[in-house]
Image (cartoon, rainbow, N blue to C red):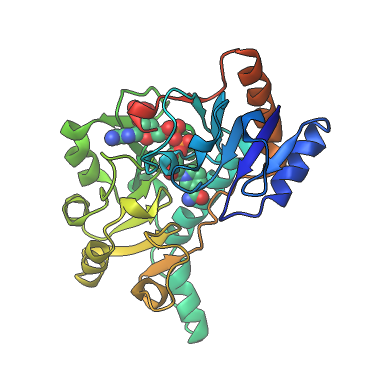
Length: 309
Ligand code: NAP
């Protein structure tokens, strides 16, 4: 019996090494060079080709290689009835919090402005900004958003969050569902998207959303590229309504060389690096789920596909 990796857009070697390094006796195979497909019981995948999972009749579990499972939702021939799990990893969470804290502080402390002034040898001080006067709004207070909220709160910012169900995070005021979205947006000087990509959240960073933010708000998208309507962001930046944006994820990745985001003075681009799964860190979780799936035990971090996250 074996574990199969399907990751056409990611190098499989680090995963094979990490899994075998943690459990040397495990039989790891890599799509598409695998044989005897009836022997595969567990598939670990990222951006698998549509329909490919149907070629494995004895799958007991399908695991995402990352926190998100949106790549499962786009496969119209995803095997029904096979349990699905995702990655929840302290290093992934820490990494994302570092990124959003770094970007928030850099914007809040006006590092771009002082860098520009440095290049002009200009010694000019702005009044000191105060974190308590800045409201950071996080869309999605799950594993990633919840941790980022608490770390930003500890720095003195005012924190609010938007979720589907009520949350109890100390010092974080939570707004729930569509009915409370406008109130949430009207307060957020810095808006961070840490939502999963679902049919409800696709295109959620759009013109209407931006117009509801306070004048001069800053937007950070670390969810998925399809959360953002790119033309609407450019318009909101160029009209002066938004002060700037930091984008780590894009509708098309890699971001095409002629894309306006690359050279826009108010946009900071990073190449989907805010939080990358470390195979060594997550190997124990994957092997644990592999063993649980084979023995019929309940799985860690199981997902109900109907909920879409
Ligand atoms: P999670 O634990 O499932 O949390 C998702 C949060 O979003 C929950 O608070 C959930 O509300 C909320 N939510 C979902 N649908 C909503 C809706 N329609 N309206 C309002 N709130 C909604 O997910 P996570 O582990 O924090 O990860 C979040 C996302 O980050 C992933 O899905 C992935 O797309 C992205 N990500 C990006 C990177 C990167 O490198 N850029 C890396 C890792 C992950 P409830 O709490 O009420 O359920």
